[in-house]
Image: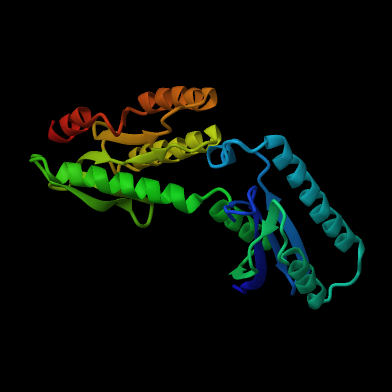
Length: 274
């Protein structure tokens, strides 16, 4: 499959130019070969307020709207133009990524490849602006901590990291699986559920509840296989986050999955030892 060469710049919010502190709030992406130009911006100030506590959110929104309008004008002009010279698109991104002392600015230009311009734009936005890598790291750290906890207690059968299911039908990888012979007795899957967006919390939970149900459909695990999801959540939950947890707690119960806070060590150890 042909891969497309693309160029991008990360849009940054830098409220205090003196200190040069910034947060990533968007992506501008071009593909000179195909004449693609598009962008994705984050307009919500909630996440940023944790870092720039005393900055006026109205100024942020005004600056973002102004920058967005500039990008939209460029995008619309390109649609109406018949000029698809690759150098034009390179020059446009060079212009947008020029150094500027403003609260909305950009990074240096980066290079990436992908099968689809839109998918690559979404991937870069998720990585840089939504910090998908940081969320993955939080879950990785949580998983390692739970693994360490389980290793330190004397379980009747060891918990190991294995693939559950059939390569030709359906399978999933789990970090903590307890077997007795070929029979899977228990599965522990730590989940990071501390996302700001309640939709992301629900989608993460839905994904792994669905995986468990599908493994049951294919008889890869038995109906009485015990399942636990130790989770990490935000310390001070918003009303939307609380609502999300009400829903996923209900769904986990229906799927016969024990949902437990990572700090409830006694319950996790009891599950592993039973």
